[in-house]
Length: 127
Image 1 (cartoon, rainbow, N blue to C red):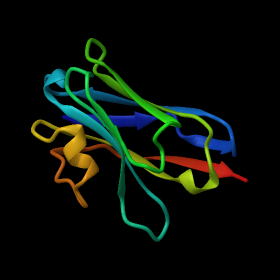
Image 2: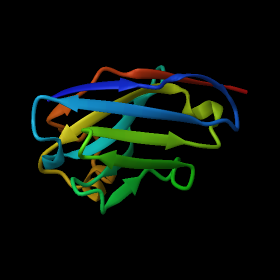
Image 3: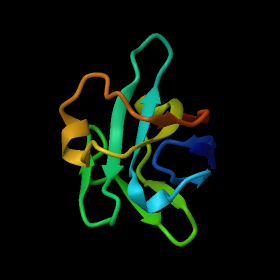
């Protein structure tokens, strides 16, 4: 599976961005999809995940209530709507896919062994 993230950019604190990740190469609906992020000098962390059918989601505490993940299996895309952005949201954001792990499981794993990773997209939030 090839994953291509887009939609990053520079935004002021309090603003919004919408990230998208396009998948190709396999049946998209087989996979749990997730977003992770890595800030400079920090380890990569889980942001949010969505089940293959889109019925189950999970979010890190730091983004719950501000970010929303969604997917369109017909278009093989997963999106991350980010609202009320804060400077601490600044990071490179990655989308990832896994055929076995559920979103709630990703929430409690330190380094989930996702099957596939995309290249990241930079999000910078200015204060």
